[in-house]
Length: 578
Image (cartoon, rainbow, N blue to C red; front, side):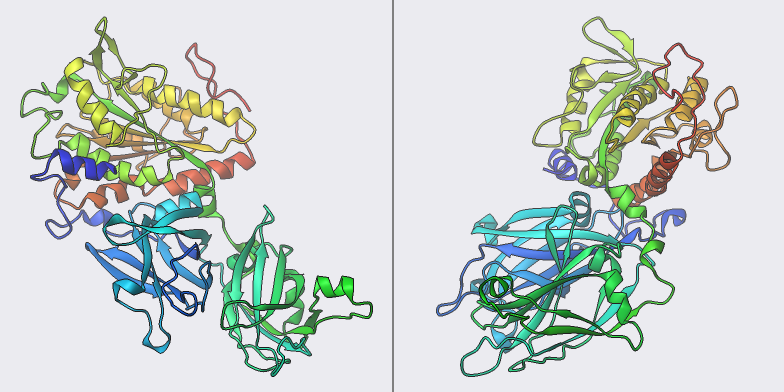
């Protein structure tokens, strides 16, 4: 169960923060730039057979949730008589890192000119997920469900995502063939062409499927456009497999032949030049002594978008999403929050309305959980006296398990642990955040030393007051700026957060007490009071807005590692020269 759903169960009378339209969102956060566009490829396995004489003719509808309603945004082609379809249609959606974008894929059995049916008998199953989940996992396979949560047999749907950057551009290709083998007894072949990209793991991704040209051994297929990223992952030498088939209305297409090429080779067809390949059937080549080929495929023309090349494509989102995310949450349990038993306390558990700490957890956690590699958040507390000796701690696990601070459970583990923790501790002080920053930074430093170095850490700090260990905090942030780590601070309550703006660094470069500047700005501070009456997504958009840039900057610096200044504390396990 998602964190927002769990909060809804706890506070049925007013669980969610204000919805869109109840109050204007802060104007400074109103605009949200698209991080990138994402291409989604869809395939299905073991679909239900709804037809009597033939197999189902599946088609996929893509719907996106908008203002609580599902709206169709696109649909695939219909594939005749196939229970294991691989759709050539590529769905393209705008991808917003800071936003929960809910998608629904619905599979229907189409009935020719009547189109996609709306009756229950035509529905083959549906699946819901978010854009973030698909992008983070790159490949998502889920079962299909009928109405009322019933499994659609063994049916599954697989969605594969690929990010395309802003200047990726498209390539237009025009193919024809000559003297293809005739696979039919009483007529000529009905050929179509498929292009597959061969990935690094030797798997193949369908790039494009042409239309069928009826009764023709020398077909000319319609020109088509594909993105450079889709065609070759912006690698000109990446191998492509091209296959020619003879179409069969029952789905049992006859293999005519294949050839291999690259985008680099294809580019020779630009202008008046033509490039051609022999279409080969490997079985015929072995069995037939005088076999030459099964026809010739000609690339008549190739057009590339102006001012675009594979080498020019940036990899912003690929850096952002090509690594595992680990999310840490740190909660302020200092006495300035007020006695949790008092309704005026920021930690008061109201049976009808979540407090600001939980609202912030919902808003930010719902986004981060899509990218967190293991879906478990490490949850820490600071500024409280904790059992059994009730000594002050500034970095304790709120589940009181020092060996495993990750919260586990079916219903919002952090919310459960947070509520369970409150009666067991004594709110105290002071508000020291440097220990937690140092703790997470130490884990990030250990990760950086590994060969893979594939993890990136997000530390979300929820606090009600001014940091009392400002010098140590500045020192810790400077050192953490050299590590795969970002820090989000949400100010809860109505305190004076002026010092927090200094940590943010937006108005100037943050420096340690000794004057060393941060390598990169890794802190984003936002006062929650600015979002009390805004939509729950407004806070997430604001606090996560700088994370993509921070991730890209870190991996950019990794190519030419700078030296981190030596710490002035006895602990020298962090920030040592590389």
